[in-house]
Length: 259
Image 1: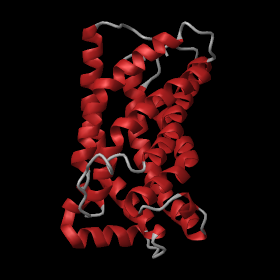
Image 2 (image 1 turned 120 degrees about the horizontal axis):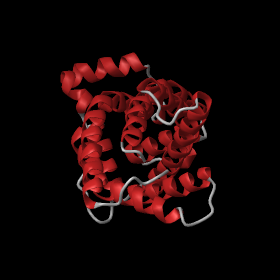
Image 3 (image 1 turned 90 degrees about the vertical axis):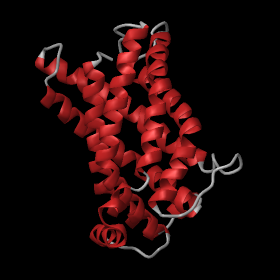
């Protein structure tokens, strides 16, 4: 990962681009996230239901508004993340350049750094998002704001390094195959899709565990049931579609900014 500039103006452009991308993408995938969480929560309760039943129930409750529950805290989290995310991404990457690290190791360390800060600052927003999605009241305080941060970190510690390592590898391999320096939008889109399927598959258990903890306050033992395994499989297509949209946008943005 190369840094084109460390100037304030370059950082500001990155932050603004990140906010724009974040707001648009998070709004677009929010209906998918709502359906995924409700579907996963039903299997935690061992009531089991289908994706179509979840959609039908949501629409019958609040109409189209039901699919945008939890959007406000999600957008707030996304906007705040740009204030620390881009400096961390750029300067940590520059710092790691001074060490003889292989590209996968470097991307992995960078991803873990981002995941750790994201879990620490973002868990309260995640709790609010989940509460709004399930239409439950939640008043945050110092005792409960970071509840479930460990599970949230596990999820992010898989997704962030997985995304950075995979997309970096696929982009380099594609450039070598085509013997070019700049990839076309179609190439970046395909790389984003491949990355989403790989990361989505390996992070599925942590994603399910995060919902179980945040929505139902269930621990890791909630994963050790047949019902939980079925829930992961049932929610995986929705999770992959959501992650695909998110990852394609991220891969394209990183390439545009030459990061």
